[in-house]
Amino acid sequence: MSQQFSPFSKEDLMPKPEMLEIKKQKGELFIGIPKETRLEEKRVCLTPDAVAALTAHGHRVVVETGAGEHSHFNDKDYSEAGAKISYSTEDVFACNIVLKVEPPSLHEIEMMNAQSTLFSALQLKAQKKEYFEALAKKRITALAFDFIKDEHGVYPIVKSLSEIAGIASVLIASELMNKDNNGNGWLLGSISGVPPTEVVIIGAGTVGEFAARSAIGLGASVKVFDNSISRLRQLQHNLGKTIYTSTIQPKTLQKALRRCHVAIGAVRGKNRAPVLITETMVEQMREGAVIVDVSIDRGGCFETSEITTHSKPTFKKHDVIHYCVPNIPSRYARTASLSISNIFTPYLLNIGEEGGIENAARFDKSLQKGMYFYHGILTHKSVADWFSLPFRDINLLLF
Image (cartoon, rainbow, N blue to C red):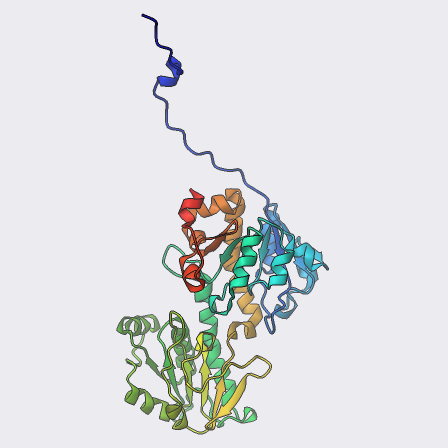
């Protein structure tokens, strides 16, 4: 009887130790910072200090000339930090990683190299299907900083910009109340012998909390409305003091609005901010009162709100001043740029240490959550549902 031949040697059949995955070697990043072209966008993703940290780790950074001028970072600052200053927009978009505050236009996507990586805001509600088709055509890996969520369940960049918007809403209202801006001449705060100005805040999220914190700091009397008892309780805890809070009941809210000097809309919604203040309620407000509708980027929570711009930020309706600029943090471009840069820089350094975005995203869940395109494949369910597009789970592609 002939001996049966086996394709395996004795050594092949012996038990072997489990092999661990070899970590990829540190890689050099090639980062482009283009100048923002969208109207009135003044922020920049990386400051010169952040560029210096990246170049010190061996990464290359190309900055388009004038990219930081609105944030008061000039080309010399970036050059001294180790960046290359480019006078060609095409050269900046030719980098392997492109960092933008606003999402790129279709023309800018066309300038990007295939298989590049894009970090920017997505602003889902403002996008069209053609934007995603253009990313897919170039096989772009795209991450939205408004989707990045850390291990604590916090959206770090969104939260930081919301803090700025909350503080800014009170400062803006204070400016608009003075007589030079056709306000009612009230000082936002509390002066001995004079009743404090009254501020009504609708929404107890991050914007509402920081608006309340700022108004209380100035000495104003603050009332906060929200339909979530948990958020109202958390707000009281974070402020460290007891203030007037209430669920949103029309009669109670209307009474508060009639007396207030400032009303701040800070309500968010899954798709559109709910309209909670009717035109009738606005009609009954004080003459010269100020509305700052921070929710305007989601449609606004005041029925009378209409989108305005930084160059023409206000309008009057029913003798009430309305401020409805959707991009409030851009008004404070240097602070906002520093905030964005401080959050971006550790991510970029980690991507370099891990040998690239693919390997970094495998171990960093926050990057996975921020990723909505992977080599031209849509990987985010909310984007897919919004535009009726097919998508694949990022975990099936990365592992």
